[in-house]
Amino acid sequence: MQPVPESSAQALFQRGQEQIQRRDYAGAQRSLRQALASQPGFAQASGMLAYLLHQIDGQLDEAEALYRSAIAQAPRLPHLHMNLGTLLLQQERFSEAEAAYANALTLEPGKSEHWSNLGSVYLRSQRDADAEACLRQAIALNPGSRLARFNLSYLQLRNQHFAEGWALFEARDWYARFEQQFDFPRWQGQDLQGRSLLLCLEAGHGDVIQFVRYATLLKARGTRQLSLLCHPALAPLMRSMPALDQVIPYSPGAAQSGYDYWMPLLSAPYQLHVAAASAATGTPGTPGTTAALSAPAMHYAELPYLTADAALRAHWKTQLPADGLRVGLLWQGNPEFEFDRSRSLPDLQLLQPLWSVAGVQFVSLQTGAGALQAQTCSAQQPMHCLGPQLRDFADSAAIIAQLDLLISVDSANAHLAGALGKPCWMLLPHFMCDWRWGRQRSDSHWYPGLLRLFRQAPDARWEPVIENLRAALAERVQATPAG
Image (cartoon, rainbow, N blue to C red; front, side):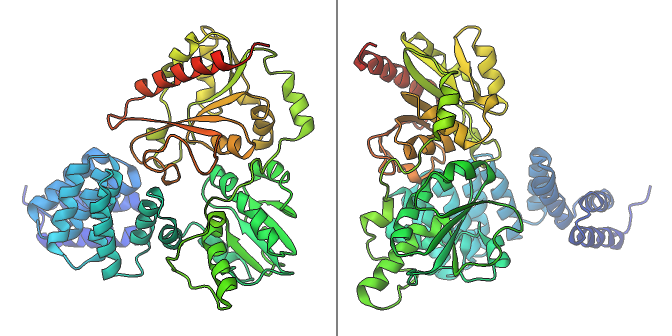
């Protein structure tokens, strides 16, 4: 059989490009595979097909092979190295990702994106000095780089450099939908006396629970009406906060007009600082300032700032153990979270050493797939499995408020325990431990006196963490007065 002319392979490649623009990804894959069948060394077709398999289909093994084949044919195309680096970083293959990104940077040393990508490798592998140097270079080359600024904010917040961290954190775009939806301006630190302000949800449930603490400070600025637009599952709970005049469950058309200002909730510490600077000097606050934040604007919380509904408390009391140390368990978070594989336990059986501690009554608040693990486990370890009965966070609050202790991975319910003023012991991963828990602390300034942190070592094993939990739990039982 005669090989197909090179011009035919090019035509198939161009057709694949057009199909990608139309989001006909299946058709694009067929065209690109035909192009490669007719011209096996077609580096651009290999690279584009690899990108589709990687980003659209998640077929990482074949995508990697195609990226490497394309690089072998065209080693001076920087985007091939960059895309391979992204795939390798996704698999936590840090040294290989570093090499791929470094290759892209060698080919295009003046491109901000390559410096930012290399910085993200160092950020995730906790090489903070290298990460900061790369990210600052990326920003120097492109001051408007959202990704580089956001990654540097993560690094600065993790290291408790809050002034610059909050300013850089404004680079996130999680709230873009609201900028398009609302017909009233975003609050940038202006006088709130007699004004109405709508706080808007961001990211996960735990972020809202943590940052709604700032509603008290915002209300104290003379805000006439302070409203919160939040996840529907949080709305009943959030109505327990006195500083909020209105709580609105989110829907696409909710709260489009009728307010003086709106603000993404996680911007509260930054904007409160801007407002404080404005009040102190008599001039508008300067976005991006790196002046020291006051303590209230950093971690303000008068604990507890949320309360459980009395009727729900009475309802759940009948399903809770009457004696012993009542300990809640949550071992898995939202599986949709980017780093959930690191923060969640694969199975409840890992907590089995805790069963040896006498005098403890375990209560599972686990929902989702993990709830079945609790029901299976209850055959060997008696457990009150309440997770499947939970309707929303108001139910969770009513249960947690009646526990002696919550043991949890990094989850929304850990924040809920702190906001309710209840003790919580949190299991933290080594890889991409969230910025808000710092680097080495065993406590938290977000929930002082309540939150105790049990961290993985660099080997990322849970077993030593759980043994430390077991020992601490045994001490807690011994220290608890009988009856």
